[in-house]
Image (cartoon, rainbow, N blue to C red; front, side):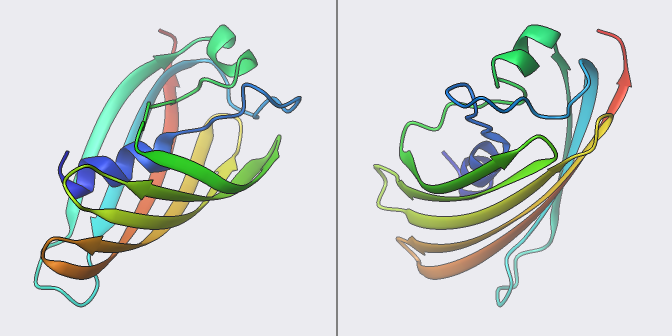
Length: 140
């Protein structure tokens, strides 16, 4: 999986299903936008936007915007109804290791988040910063 897709998947993972906290996220169709940068490298800033349907069942089960990232393990997590912070470590089979510190805010019809990652890649050490914004755009 490319570095950028791997990082976005990790940022969007909201694994709160086992907790008693329900995020303040309104069901509906959501547009998610990310800006990814790699400080200290000549790589240009990358932008991506996606849309997805989030149902009330997804929110109740803690599955809103969940993406399966098998190579990762949560090492620290604090979940509240208005947001969460977490640290995740990932070891990908292609030799890329990553430690991510993420913070998300759940604002009802909006979400905002940041993630900073330190990676060890086959090309050497690299840093990455991801800024995420999501907006409910209507019903599914």
